[in-house]
Length: 222
Image (cartoon, rainbow, N blue to C red):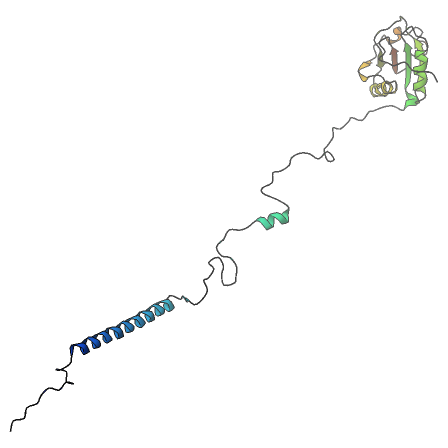
């Protein structure tokens, strides 16, 4: 006897089209999840191999692990300059301090002791007493003095004559009489002829000729 088998509704041959679509959609969803997790694992693995950790805070490129900056390798000379008291931005002040400025050396006067210096004061004007007043002033400073009159008054230019080695002494005499130093000149050989009565003064060292120009101020007798 021949038995005939009929397809049942649950067999694959008899699967409805709707069931096929559902299974296909489910397979696609599962495949998408598998690909997503596989891709995520690949990214994490790549990050671990490259030594990066996305969960750690960003590393400051300007600092090393010790917290010190390693970007600037140039040497900062500012602290050394401050210690040495120098500043590269400052210009050198070449102005001399008045307190340290070297003043010109004034030549030292070479003079004789006043008591060894003999000075003749000669009145070359018509005003009496001028030679005596000047002689008195110089004698108060220790000089040996003698007042005289000029041989041929009046004498216009005032002059202080000095013999050899008494130039500096003549400067001091001029200063004592408030006379300018430019009236000093070396005594000529005929100096005694300018004096009316030259007796006793031939060995004198300085001759003060008081002229009418007033360059040797008039002295007052005390």
